Length: 158
Picture 1 (cartoon, rainbow, N blue to C red):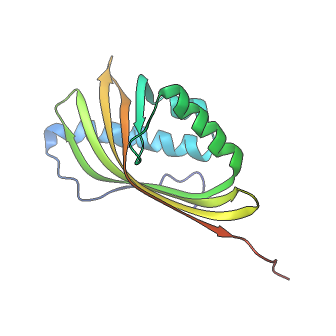
Picture 2 (cartoon, one colour):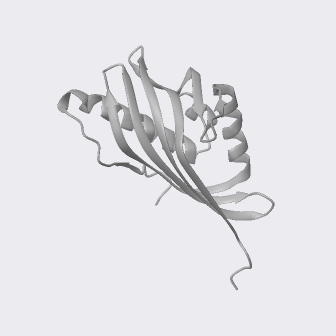
């Protein structure tokens, strides 16, 4: 997949015409996220998050907006490339000012732990968005399920 191409899939989301505009606006936000992630643009990602954003991790712990920013910076320092990233929107509900979206994110590329390795991460998240002054900001992201595979890169091709 070319790095400039957005890979945003909409799956099994039931909507009516009243919510179609909101869903389209949120799809644009996820496309912005994908572009920022591929560019390792921490400021671009952070611009999508509310000032009081909370990231609820699978182990029950929470990260504030500042801790989320620090985690992104660290991730981008240890990630040498991200060959693919895709987001599938699985569920969507909205009352017009608050929207809840269940997504599945999958990313794949090269990273450096103790040595270079190939990674594949799949996460399911429930994300809550609110409309503030006509624009959508993510308030919370709750990890529902997360799996990362690290595969060592051994040898070279002659």
